Length: 278
Image (cartoon, helix red, strand yellow):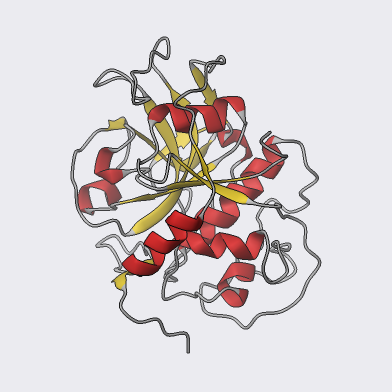
């Protein structure tokens, strides 16, 4: 049985039956962020589109009763980014069981550091979902042909500052990448159905999702910190609670439209290198 100590564990099942699954050791996560490579668009002077999206490449799925939001967020981010760059990804759904069985985490929860198993550790990438279909329970690590990998990942923002709207827009609009992020999925957040979510709740971060699109709602005019004027701009959030949750984006359900930072959305964010950033 996989055990970790000194953890903030937030696997809770919501009143609607949705699982979350962020498992965070504060000390370990601080060390991870400190050692990770960071990408910031604060000083980027090139053009950033006023809106952009890779949501059409997202494979919305359902983690069900397994606390695997971290897996769906990370694997989904890599899978979506590969598809957005025209890479040959054979399955509509990626193999969720790879990280679930081969990283140190499982249905009990996980965190951003599992990204290493998609880049430099283990098989260094995920396999087809059809090779080992997801069953929403812990599995043993197996070996199948890798269909999706990346040479490296990076956290958005700097070592001392959280990601800004400009950072997210740069990743999606310029680099054409999906972004893995965390959020405080409170009751109101979980009950989302439509519209632009803007609640300022500051509860405990307990869930991981993807940001796959944004709209500056006009011209992107960022301040010195990379933020838009208050009340401007929203992002497209791809969740892992199935297509019946939330609202439709790019022709499929399972999404949320939200102000960045609402419910601490995007306090931490990770992207994969597809291809090299430089």
